[in-house]
Image (cartoon, rainbow, N blue to C red; front, side, top):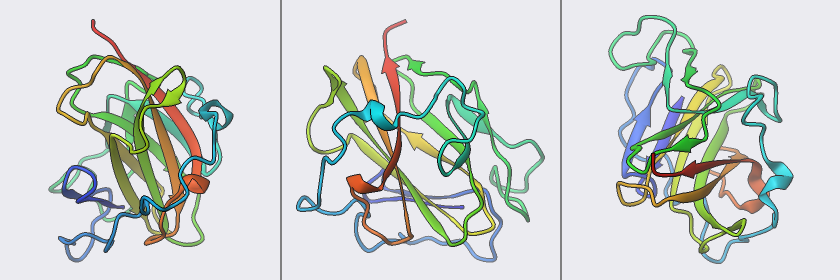
Amino acid sequence: MMRFPTYYSNNRVRLALVLVSSILVGPAFAKDPFGTEESPQILIEKPTDIALDQVNWKKPQGVFTWIAMARGYDTPWATHGRPGWMTDDAMVEPIDPGVSTFAPDTPEIYIVFEGQPLDAPGQFAAAWHLLADGKKVGDKPLGKDVVELEMNQRYAYFIITPPKGVWDPGKYLVDIYYGSPGQELHAINIIGTMTFTIQES
């Protein structure tokens, strides 16, 4: 699995879940795959229309064999070097799956998933927004994360991070996208949504 948050998400490149012959150090995309300000924006008015089941997360949903919001991820076998690096597609398991409420000082929220078998390399992405009265606040997301899966890979995860190091209390929406590697992602590419709540303990 190749992770490319690059300049538009945390300014870093994460490569995880597969041992490759060489380590990629540059961004995979010449530009933000989420398109430009002139790209189509809101084509789905009600996020609940395509909401993923976050409670019964083990069941197949769309292109996912399963998908869960979690506090982290684990690999069920010993790894060499960085976590998740194996000779085969590394399985990952969510830690505390089904959770949807977090404290303001939570540094990272994870969305862990197993995809259905791919007939071509795929690009998965997540973008998160603050909600007010059930609607997104502002046109731009608070953050984005992008991963690429090859045809022989199924497991991956998104890392959802606060925009300023700490979360403001409230409810948040995560749009999940799917497309081809290098393809610009627009609202029409949204295949599901998840929500989480930030509240003081």
